[in-house]
Length: 270
Image (tube, rainbow, N blue to C red):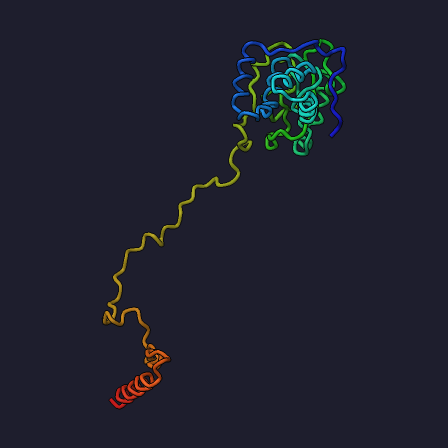
């Protein structure tokens, strides 16, 4: 990421102060954080300062540092690290952020940047002569399926053509930006596919043949004595008679084994 520096001294205002509404908002925001953790409000306060003045000035950074009892350099680090903060003057009516990441590039974002170069300024992050418009190239803004797109303030304008972007720029320059509907600029609902369905065009009925079969009565099962239910058919003794007597009683174990053998011989002779 390239080095980001504050704007030159000649364009920096002498001081900064939140207006009454934003002052109340800032105080409530700071109170959301536990005691000793108020510095966590640095990003929302810087963003509110940008929304009030259009960009983050040196005086705004100093004011936020004072409100949060932070070292000035710490707030400066935050403001210069995150590219969401504009640390140089931008257009007062519109600052256009053109996505240049791969999906938008493949769909024509370079042509959109040519429009910005022609209608605003040849170089990004420079205002037009009247100071009302500016532009820059940015990374992915999360509308890849509707590429190419631009972001103006907090609104996304998608599915753009160079001609449509020219119309949008003219509307903002004329102070009629609120008449331009954000989102797709073609006949598309949000991110739905363009045009009619290309798959699942025929209605198909599910195969329910396995569910529609009538229940057939089960064949009569052989009667099984309850005592032998769920037991396998086997002539193997369930337990070795020797194990029915503890090893500490060898005489009793031998007698049990002899009795088991006698019973087995009797069954076989029958």
